[in-house]
Length: 76
Image 1 (spheres, rainbow, N blue to C red):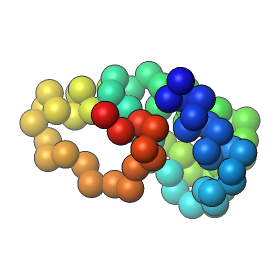
Image 2: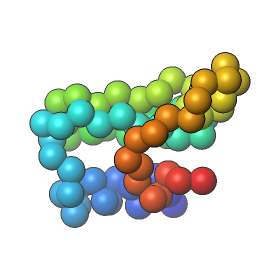
Image 3: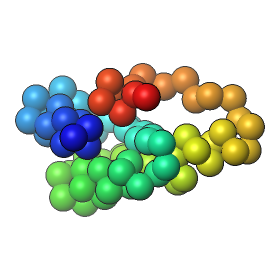
């Protein structure tokens, strides 16, 4: 459900510029990778990256929490 809501927000509402950088982060890194592949390869976004392993790996290595603007659908 969250993935579909996010993709709808980005693709249908068109609130995101295709020429701006976008960093996608999720809990485990799977859904953000899928979304990044779709947005970059299929939808023409020029700079989409995903955080490999998601927040789970980020926290495992005791890094400070990233401070990015986030989409409410991926917030937990």
